[in-house]
Length: 179
Image (cartoon, rainbow, N blue to C red; front, side, top):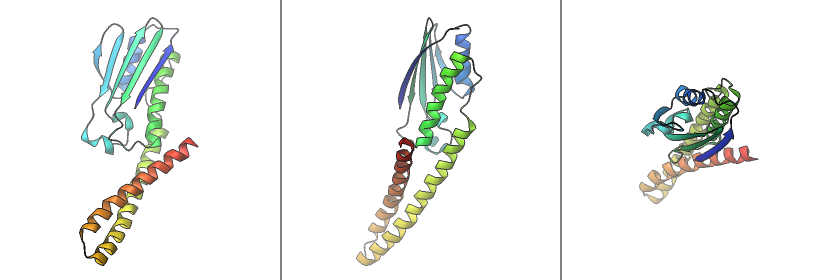
C-alpha cells in the first residue's frame, strides 16, 4: 500500500522534533535524516502476518519538509498480510493522526486502542472462519477420498476449503466496510 499526503503548517518551530517524535514513539526507526528529509522504517519479519498491530508491518516512511509544506510518503508492505478492512483503517488513522499531530500540535502519538481492538477481534473472527473451513474441507475431503479411494483428494480439500472460507470472510468484511 502506498499513500502520500501533502499539507501546510503555519508554525514550523520544532517541526523536525515533532516529526521525529511522532514516528519514534510509535515504534519506527529513524535511519536517515538530512536538513529537510527524514526516512523511518519498521523492518519486515516472518511473523508480520500474525501480529495484531498492523503498525509493526514492514514499512518505509519518507517525510520531506520544504518551507511550510510537508510531504509524507507511506510505503507499507501489505503483500504478505491479511489486508483486512480493519488493518487498513489503522493505517489510515495513523496517517491522519500524523497530519493532526504536526498541524494542530495535538498529542496523538498512537493509534487509538479502539482501532487495535477492532483488528484483534477481526483476527479472531477470520481464524474462526478458517477453522470452520478446515472442518468443512476435512469432512468433504474424507467423504470424497472414501468414495474414490484416493487419499490425495483429502489433502487437497482441507487447505483449499480453509483458504476459501478465509478469503470469503475477508472479502465480505471489506465489502461491508465500503457500503
